[in-house]
Length: 86
Image (cartoon, rainbow, N blue to C red; front, side, top):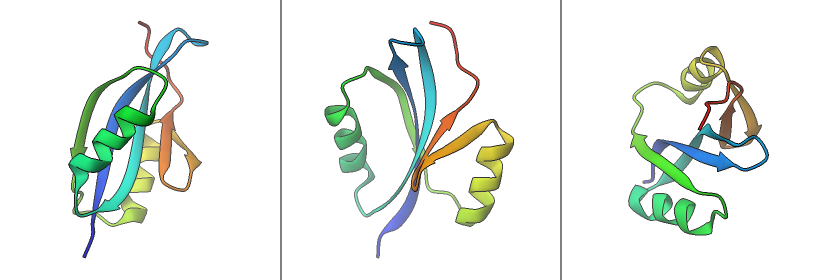
């Protein structure tokens, strides 16, 4: 049975000239494969990749993401509104 992981990373956006934090929710038995796929298929530079296996429910995690300033941009992807400077 696949486990749920939250993958946290920052992706460079050349239009904003900043790294933007993202959270990707994946269901997998191999989180390392998911992280590698994320890095290898992105055109933008990705840094600061880390992951957790949350014990909270999906709904509780989504509430926390929203409280921390993230907005949902896809079914399994969240982007932080506040952008960091390079």
